Length: 247
Image (cartoon, rainbow, N blue to C red; front, side, top):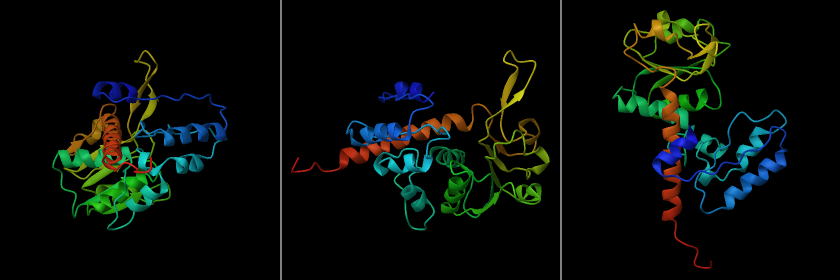
């Protein structure tokens, strides 16, 4: 889907497909080659990586100027700091905020609850909501009485990786609910024997929520759109830099 989106908007995409047993050094070599290529403005390492690969080492090797996934520690660090702006914001959290902004849903001063604390979505989206002046709580596996906390939220972002965990009676009437989850559950009525659902019980929650995203078709396309936007921003920065007079 990412490759298709690149083609649709006229971006060149380079795919480096490696076997599952590729060594860490082999992956690093490819990352360094892309770092050095002036025609490449964004590098995305598809996660998760095989267990024998040090994910932190691979992500740290990506040039911060090309870190369109926004996972470089300097980008994440600036996202967490007041008065600092990262070069790139992680795509899914950025897409969540974009949905709220486009629908003109107030964020400033509102109570936001993020369900899940992953490095990819939960933690960065909480930091991003904080930057937009929401009052943010994170619900996770050790939280007691998740339901009562979620029920206080004007904005709920569900990213726990648990199928239909957030029930309709968890939702405050009129709340904005963004479902990041992608979970397959058994469904004998489907040819494949399964169907895709989110972390929110959509059928029940939509009766209460003011706004709610479906799964599939909600956050997923926004994530891809933000990846393309980040890549475009990286290219603009690269083109605006003065050429080295000694080159």
